[in-house]
Length: 238
Image (tube, rainbow, N blue to C red; front, top):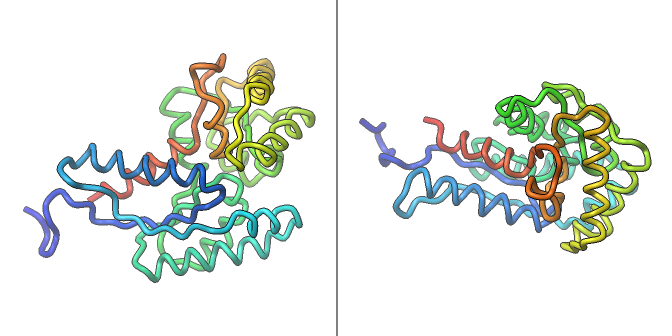
């Protein structure tokens, strides 16, 4: 029997999404979460979501300046706005900006659905024991990501870090996908496999624009899909 005021089959939670970093992957979050909820509940059901879509130019300026205090304050302000608007949890729709997750968590009283936890859950469910990390250079080299993974992280070479970071910010965050860059990124995947990675975490939400398991030699953990799945689990929990 449903609780008073609750319609049978409805989701009982709302997630606040901090998106726009870039908007190309935020679209995947919105569509992916709604599709999964609609499939699970049927009828006319969709997800209860709030979205704060940031101007990526402002965020990238803070990244380039290494102003992570400013970036943390910006995302924390939007997280608090979403909480005050009724969000029961917050999801940051990007890997890199989880560098400032502690600043966000300090300003809210609802859970932050952390993308690295979602990536770890996906990798462990598939029996992977080690993951290469591909993303922005901060994500690939700093401990905020690798140390939170529940399995061994394999670091790319300095050259491959620079290559991956360059393609992300020069092309993918602008929605540009080329065969030349896809081939270069596939080379990074291959070298991570040779370095001992069982799989590779696409730890930038734009990387799935150009890479998927159909064109890679080892399993990929799509961080966007993993994070979307975590959001859906939260929404459907009773």
